[in-house]
Image (cartoon, rainbow, N blue to C red; front, side, top):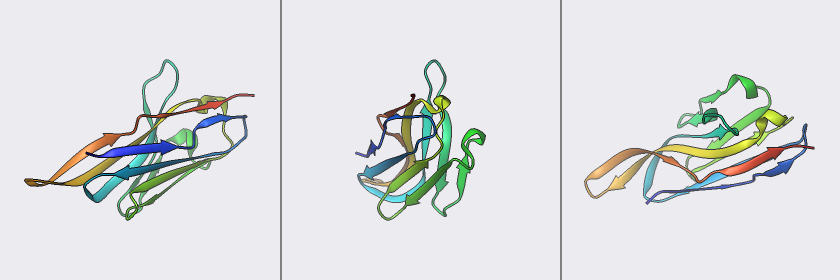
Length: 123
């Protein structure tokens, strides 16, 4: 079983900063990609940022220059530093990951999601 545990959400004023963290556990022998998605009220879930095994990063246009993603493949963790937060940053943030797992049949690649953490940007 793979588990993703998120931390760092909460209430922040516009212009403030937050740092999200996600840690994975389970029979993972390779991290292919980890990242963060956001679901704003009444909207579909969308990619915020992701980082691949080799350190390549990808950001939504709306957060470029504002958010920074970092990952540690050995520790199976990913962090998202969010600066200059705006009201439109409000939503539930989900940790997402693609892992290669050890299985009885050898190995298996799969996508996994954390339960989500609420971020509210409001004065």
